[in-house]
Length: 389
Ligand SMILES: Nc1ncnc2c1ncn2[C@@H]1O[C@H](COP(=O)(O)OP(=O)(O)O)[C@@H](O)[C@H]1O
Ligand SMILES: N[C@@H](CCC(=O)OP(=O)(O)O)C(=O)O
Image 1 (tube, rainbow, N blue to C red):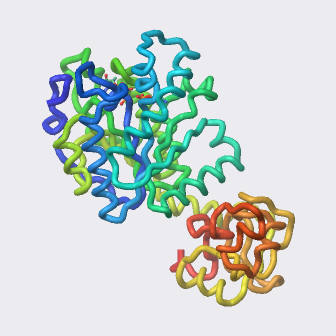
Image 2 (image 1 turned 30 degrees about the horizontal axis):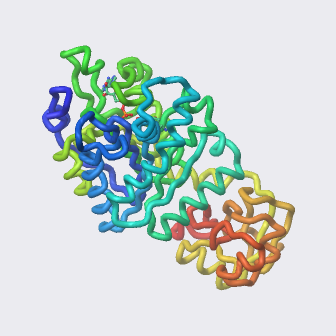
Image 3 (image 1 turned 135 degrees about the vertical axis):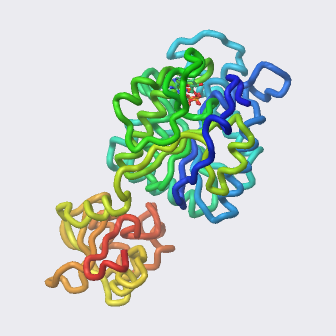
């Protein structure tokens, strides 16, 4: 039974989770903030987080990738100075005070190194910062770490006032091309009315899309959270437009969390619209190109046959003054039709300098490195054969 006297398992019978390989898991303050008894360490309580950490470990054992968006910094900060106030500046200071405890808290629960990533919505609007965040997060996954993302509350004035980690989690899901957004909260899922106020509220198991009608039934936050069900639905709507489905479930219910890794959801599933990868590849196919890279036959073959990333070793040269993040064409001969298109991870000038070199030399040559590829395979569409995509 949940704290609200409703049973998530009974209200939300199991349904299959969509197949996924990379997911963003959002954990709200309502699951982490101390519950006013002796189990609290630095304002955070592991009783629900431990089950979620086990779920993450199960996912890793299944060779799946998870990124965690965790709230709880303000709650942890509050415990350190025992302040009951609630102004914006105080919350920003509390977030700074509590963020280190929040990361330390998760590190004690998970079996691999955790990495702290603080983002603002501004970072995701600025194309260069967006690409940097994306490259860092991918690299953190490649290194086998658990990235833990939170909003950079101390500098995000508007974001802390208006924003919430639900929307941030949707933005991160789309940033890293996740194929599932999981939102763990303190209630079984979406109900047809505010469940604490209306005893006739019915569980909503599935939504094909987030309609205005659904947004209208989703109310505000509980005692500890920010935004309530409304921001969760807004987040689901954002994820859906990127083709990513969202699962809302009760992270307080051990039985619900236990079966999640086996692909069973007791909660609300909001479907993604269309095929995420296809939409992205379709865009790459037609977006105006800012330049070209010429590659050798081996690289062209690797792109075509293996759907590989384009590494600098196979690049012969770069043409056109394109910048990092621009769409470029990949050609084998400078006068022939392109064999692929994709997003450049490096500018034309930078590619010219690393062309023909091994990826491990990038840092020595440029003095920095955005990743091992000139075009990452997720950002690449092969034009000659459909099968390699
Ligand atoms: N229609 C609804 N269905 C379910 N929960 C709702 C609904 N409307 C409002 N809520 C509230 O949303 C809360 C979850 O959001 P929130 O308090 O922000 O938690 P979190 O910290 O997990 O983000 C629930 O506990 C419930 O009080
Ligand atoms: N960034 C803030 C949390 C903001 C937020 O959205 O909270 P919640 O609704 O509990 O996910 C913190 O770490 O306390």
